[in-house]
Length: 249
Image (cartoon, rainbow, N blue to C red; front, side):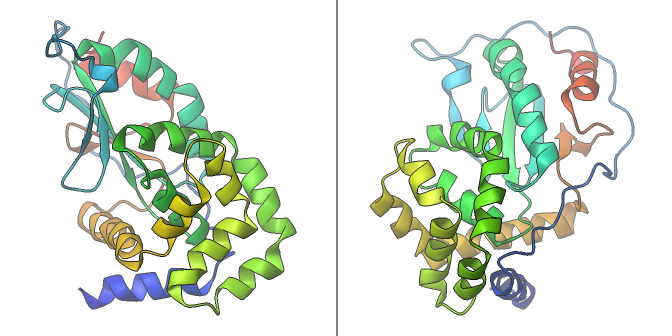
């Protein structure tokens, strides 16, 4: 394990209430090249692209045609209000209009900003891969409630920093109501606690975040990549025209 990645994990565990804010500023690449509309690509018999989920080598969760000619990637934080806004405004159109054609895929990757973020990132990965993005969207929809519980249980959160790692994230989830939140959505309390006690799983998420942030120069959330290039858009009204310009319809 690279020392820097372990240092990141140590730092993020040490301050449970340091909720780093997301940013509306993102470094971007050149504009998206214009292309003709791309014809729909049929899914294999008996399947649908909107229900096809792939875990990528980067640790992201991709919905849609893994070979789609237009590949959209979001780097997001689960404690980022702008990410929550995109989940509410952009994801429905992606799932209903663009992903089913097989022309566009959408991959969600984590840029971990704080311990509550890392707790949610662990929990949404705890069940079947098909549940990851829907659970992430539900957690974003409840973000204000999660913050309210964190504020109300500040002392409990601070105390979690003194616990062994195998107990720390369980304590964070209990203080923020996340154990009950996910239990109401099909992830049992026992399953949640097992995942949150898995240091290897937690380190893998944190280390992937650090490595990719360093390699790609991604510091803000949400940041989007379109066919591998950062784009100058971080909300749906600006992003949809770029997808269409690339050939999505």
